[in-house]
Length: 281
Ligand code: SF4
Ligand code: SF4
Image 1 (cartoon, rainbow, N blue to C red):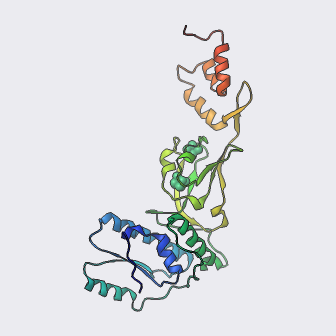
Image 2 (image 1 turned 30 degrees about the horizontal axis):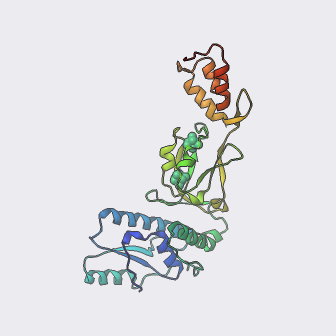
Image 3 (image 1 turned 45 degrees about the vertical axis):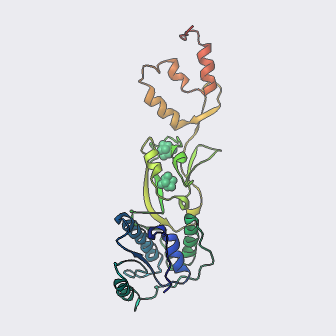
């Protein structure tokens, strides 16, 4: 047994626990006492449930075998009893994880990426004749997953791209496309709350194919060209949605509605060249 002191028990997570197993540890026990607020215990337990689902799904542990556990005790005596109960006679992992060739760093997501690559490279489930495409994970505290975009309501406004803190959602400066890199997504839900069209929902999972690291197009549309100079200035879906919403508005009737189909420059030219435009002198 190698005891390791921590600044705070909730400061560790899947990055450190899974790396410990990949360095050859048979078990990881996290000692928590009643000094921590209950929210920290709940957080650590939900992260352990994620780790357990990953290890089971990848084929490293059998169902019911739990190499990661929280130990909750109030005295050294209780600790001794609990550690003996959990460690003596504990089964080895169903499939041994080969020794990790990487070093744990202070950058948590980077380390998690390294350990996940290692676990996926050697995963027994991927060596079977018919491996699954993805593993379902518990929703609470999920760290991996995908976004589902409703293509009928998404206008390609790209608000979700600006909101995404992990660069999982990306635009394409060559074409009106919304792209997604699943490996980067931390399932924070910021895109869901930011989307003005309520066009996004999340599915927690671990994608097992090579697509996990590649950008994939999750929605795309045609560029919209200015009706005056033909220069593209928006997306077809975005302009159509704007016209649909403003068509009944008193301020956007006749020429004003037509100007919404123009780029910024042409709108100004059109306003100043229109003979019937109301001017303030
Ligand atoms: S999903 Fe929502 S926020 Fe993202 S581009 Fe589509 S409409 Fe905009
Ligand atoms: S859930 Fe978070 S990380 Fe994932 S795409 Fe949305 S904003 Fe980005």
